[in-house]
Image (cartoon, rainbow, N blue to C red; front, side):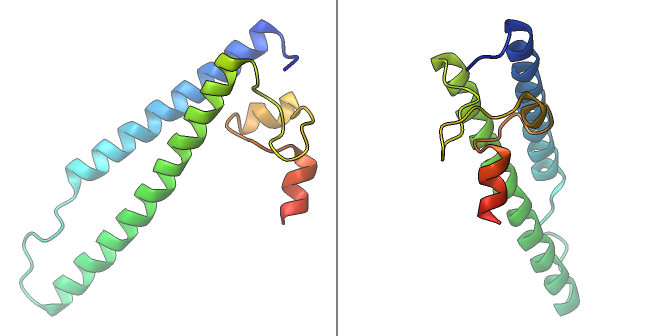
Length: 113
C-alpha cells in the first residue's frame, strides 16, 4: 500500500528471515527426531507417542506460519501488501513491524477475539 520503499524492504527482510528461521527449525527438529527408535517398554512408547504428537503440532503451526509469510511476500509483489483482508484498510506499519505476515489490521484482529 503506501509504505516507503525502505519500509517495504525492511518488512520483506523480516519475512524472509523468519521463513528461513522456521525452515531451519523444522529441518533440525526432523533430523533430531528419533520417533519409534529405542522403544523398550510401554512407558517409552507412551513418551515417544507424546513427543511425536507435540512435534506434529509444532510442525503444523510452523507450516501455517510459512504459508502466511508466503502470502505476504506474494502480496508485496502484487502491490497489495498491507491491506487488511477483512476491511480493506491499511494495516499500520507498527503492527507489521511486529508481525509482518499479518493479514488483518488491529481493529479486525480485536473484533475476532
